[in-house]
Image (cartoon, rainbow, N blue to C red; front, side, top):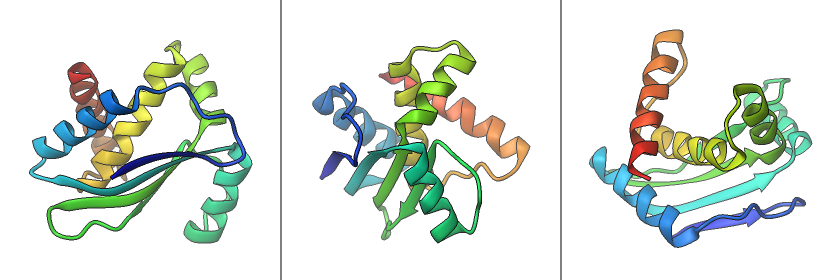
Amino acid sequence: MIQYIAENIKMPVIEKQKLNRWIKEIAADYGKKTGDIAYIFCTDERILEMNKQYLDHDYYTDIITFDYTEGDTISGDIFISLDTVKSNSEEFGTGFEDELHRILIHGVLHLCGQDDKTPLLRTEMTGKENRALEKL
């Protein structure tokens, strides 16, 4: 089951059924099926708090993915700062919805085992995001 939860912030307008089909399709592209995935939309302050508490990082980010995947079934909690999604969309000159979709699938790619810890891997991840976005 894929859930969308707003934590002390207004829920963004999303087409849940369309997104759920897309997420399942992208997971299948990586040989995975979807289990329980929760997208938790939050503020910058909440994501900073989580970053400090769980990752020992003292900075803002757009997404934190907690991976509970077992075998080929991806599951996890994906925290997304809508504040940062908005500022990123402004910085990169993209629409808010487009940036939100990119971040939604970024979390799924992490659950599918994709990494972005080096500059080369970040470039590859962006390519994977772009290919996924073309399918939406």
